[in-house]
Image 1 (cartoon, rainbow, N blue to C red):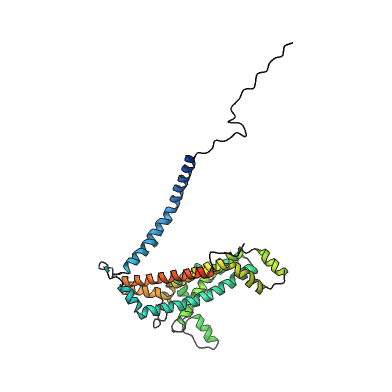
Image 2: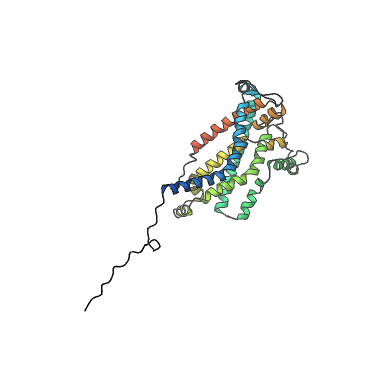
Length: 321
């Protein structure tokens, strides 16, 4: 009996079989994909970069150059070196404007931060209604000019409803925007009213990142709401609060619209903030070189304040492990 010999199975290519090894990607293909992603990213970044260059970088560089010149729009700029800065240092109006601006910033930031923090904590601890958040944000949707005009009518000494209420209560009418003592605090509180809702929502977003487990553990240990606020909320909210403070301080130093609409820098320069003084030098007296020097000084002041705030508040660090 003969035994049929079986031929060995043929070796078929396994390129289509499951479990087959895939061809490793070459360095050239990876580099091609990277370059393609880079080109796509450049396309998306280009509009923002163009806007940054045209509306921010170039005007800043142009302003720094003009600060070393005498320029009035009618004649070519004349290089004068540090003359504008020497004049600024010896100008009492500049220092008075800076003092008024600092007074405004202290009142505005102090009241706004405390009020915004209180509103944010109440929204977090008591209710998280979207309707209430919308109501809180409503004043921010109004422009500074409109807000200034509305409050100018409300606080008018003779016809304003605010002074009508004060008179009905038996008190003397108060010239809120016409008195040197009341003018800056009034403008600061007007802007607090407009911006406090937006600031509160920024802080509310920071509160949302704090884990509820920490509050529950503190309640088990018998901690009160006040103790939890100082021991949990404030330390963990510090990075967000620091960034909000930096943003609001920069914005407060650039106050202009409310002053221009309500007081025009008066009475007796009591509200002549630095931005309004710069505007008057440039478009009132056509001293664009001197106005540019004051603008550069404001830029330096804001840069120093921002750096100090960032370092003191440790804005780049978080206590959340």
